[in-house]
Length: 251
Image 1 (tube, rainbow, N blue to C red):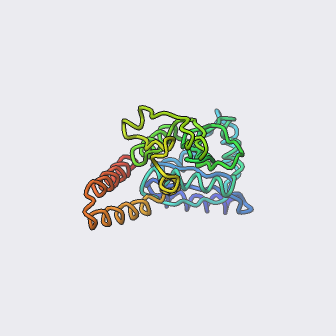
Image 2 (image 1 turned 120 degrees about the horizontal axis):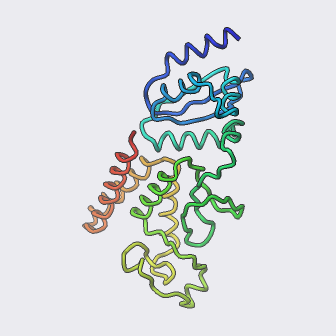
Image 3 (image 1 turned 60 degrees about the vertical axis):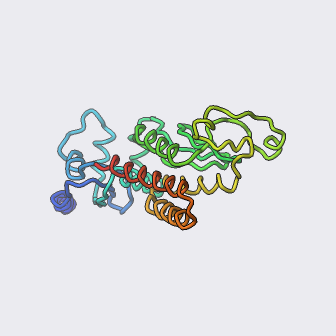
């Protein structure tokens, strides 16, 4: 017990005041909790500097901690995604217990023709893809707002099967005139082009902003070489959006 205390004390002395994620392990080496913090030192120390009388579950968690590991990251998005991935991978016991039955939001990429993307608190096993859960609702809205600005993803609930589109079942809506949707319901946007946008959205949701930036730079250069300056400017605007987004989510 004494050696465990000394081991934890030595780690606590080294924890930096940087943003990142931390993992708590029990004596068997099992991950029992994963968290994120703007200031790792302050957050991790708070577990050991308080009695946690108002939270018996937290008090029990602290009594089980035998080892601590932490990872320093650059941004809130990096921390959030890493935290979510580790929770999904290890399913730590105390992440589940400390939720207190709260349902955290996820982002759904719906399994359908011309997939919609939206926030949800309900996971439906219908083949749709879910990203999260996210502990920060404002971050979900920020992500969705970025996606809407980058890609003309539809928001309507129409069933856009090939037959319905060919039969002309739908009419142009305001979002088309606002250039926020390319009207796949009217056949104005191919499913291939739309799916390429969805692939890039998934890269963003997985935290791979650099890969999306590389694709946009390549598209911009190709458009410039073909003298398609409007397309090149569109790519440039998207790159600026990504850069502004990265600045926004810095701690």
